[in-house]
Length: 140
Image (cartoon, rainbow, N blue to C red):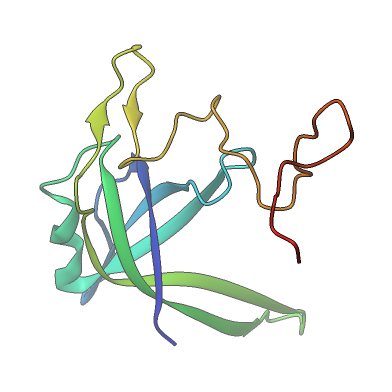
């Protein structure tokens, strides 16, 4: 299953040698799909892909292609646990990468408004004039 996400790099961890033949590197991205409730999500790169983060820094806007993976684990006592991971195939700087916010609030993500300036939602009621009309002059 291929999934794409964009956001701002929040944390980049060092590469870990998990076993003789397996390395992984985790990183955290702040997804800005909903500025009111930003999500901070942990992703992982494995093997040769770990180097994809080398040219990126915390605060950079990134685009990520990843797969949702899950597995079952049974303990020696018979308990069953389930684990999920977001395995990244490709991480790259987002088009029009992050730029510095002139107000000194870190980085702004692409052309998205800063978090404290939430764009209007489509489901909000229209403003009305003093006669109760919504300003829409269309007859239907």
